[in-house]
Image (cartoon, rainbow, N blue to C red; front, side, top):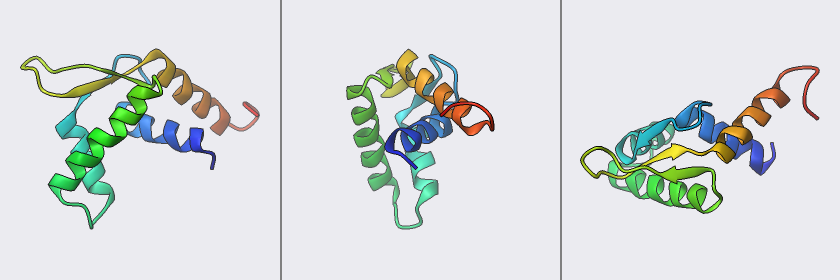
Length: 96
């Protein structure tokens, strides 16, 4: 599994495949917390911010504060394209 494929799978799990799909920092932390029995809420929240800042730096997600100013991100056009590319590569007879 390539790094891009892993990132696309991560984005698909967290945001789906639609451009502009938004998740709050708390929702992302909950999703990350469910992946690991060793993670607690604090470490999952820190991991969520670290992961999203990395994806934001790559242009895969955009900062999208919530209605009350809480942290959140939305899937960017570039991120949605990576997810779509990954989905087409998963279909037999398509992709690479």
